[in-house]
Image 1 (cartoon, rainbow, N blue to C red):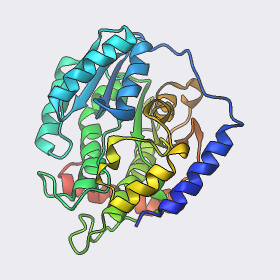
Image 2 (cartoon, helix red, strand yellow):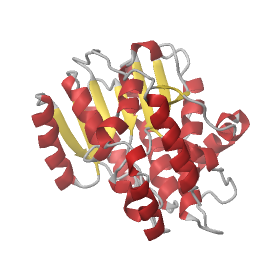
Image 3 (cartoon, one colour):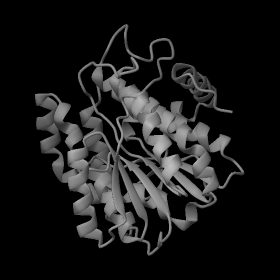
Length: 310
């Protein structure tokens, strides 16, 4: 089970630390650049889209619910004053949808400078994706793994480019069950979520190594304990505790800042594969630094998705 008390303690330490850290800001412009953000119809994804749109980028929000996505597009345009914002259908729980989305981007877009793997599900009841993956590892990891693979040639052609994947501090108590990646032998929704977030960090670490010399860099991050729709699957006691610690949590604007930092901060141009929190480098778990595990998990991901990633 995710340790809520630990989450509270970390939240308190983050809030205390942030009192003495100047808020990050940057005037970097993204005119002429194209950005894809998954799950940007709400929460930190939408706030990220608003910020990057204000910087002049063309924004493509990739969402499963097109009605909500179209509403979000209007809000992003209104907030940013940039009408170069569109939405496209993407269901990360279905490889067919991922392939169709990627084929459309590769066909219609001349460049893709920033890919932000933001969408996710959290501590949901057991379920499986269209491809038979446990829902949390399927959406949070396998979906973004395949999406990145499908878009990588365009991203490389657009270099310098960045790939940003939203993870969580929950990765710290996660483990990768290579022999039961879909939690079919036993399922704990909190452990499955932590596994998927650890997968995000391992993926970024492996991806960065494979992208050396291409001009494409990769980053993973913890956005903070953010008040989002992802809390809807928490149990009654967990909801109560999270409400009690809400003074130490972030709103969506605050939660989006580290994603934005990883997407635009000039100092990161020569960095790749790192893990970030509060707009600064952060320590990830020892398991997340295990290159042997990362390689085995990479190979497993390729086999399960039936792809060859050289």
